[in-house]
Image (cartoon, rainbow, N blue to C red; front, top):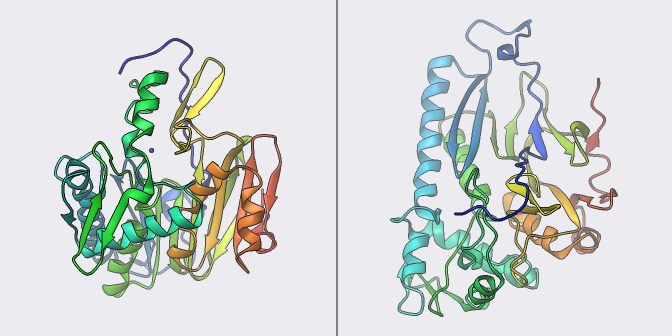
Length: 349
């Protein structure tokens, strides 16, 4: 989530907690070795959903790779256009404009994301709330940072409340019951959008691919015959990796943190992950990394666990056998679930 400058020092921080380790790829100035001519992994990047999205495909010739990656980007752009709160013509904006007035017809892809949002809102006790779009006083974009006045924030908080989002799956409609409400699906739409891009690649016959969108990574197959590797940064020292997760066949690495969009103000880091109960940026957790074999298992929970605080990850893990989660806390501690420890392998120097 995130025009005037208010008092204090502004310092922008930006890095992703997870990153694909692609240093062995030919474009990194390494020899391709035994790779056959024309079979080198292919890469493309675009800015989507306010972040850089990277695609990598392997085992496909250059011309075909660029074609299928263009198709994947087109699908992701189509879905972003529906779910972005920043586009006047998006479905999300139409739902907000009709708040307190009438339900809005929504496409099946949007309904699926809204249903996930509603479920995570319920299961997290409101720690994840898709209606934080009403908190408009915060600005986290470069050169546009702003902190809302207390009175402004109090007024906006009256329009936050996921229980007032009503979905009618049979009719295909969504309704925000109170005037002034607005949706922000930034914490829950990105993984389904990236997954849709990966599905396009699969439908076009690609079996080895990776998508990285601002620290959320989905991968299938392998990279030059070996598992994909996704490094997990140490938020206390971003140049250092806590380890790397190997993905073989299929996997999702999702991350949330105070590092993505934020600034220092009067000695405090203010960032885009907002607590829907207070309206202020979360405290206590620098970042959360989750690993799963499907998107639904982790979608939205990075944000929810940051809002809930340092004790949330152990409790969340205890309720989910085999769940893999890492929480890097502000006090300097790093907690890992039993399922994460064998996945997070040391990274060779």
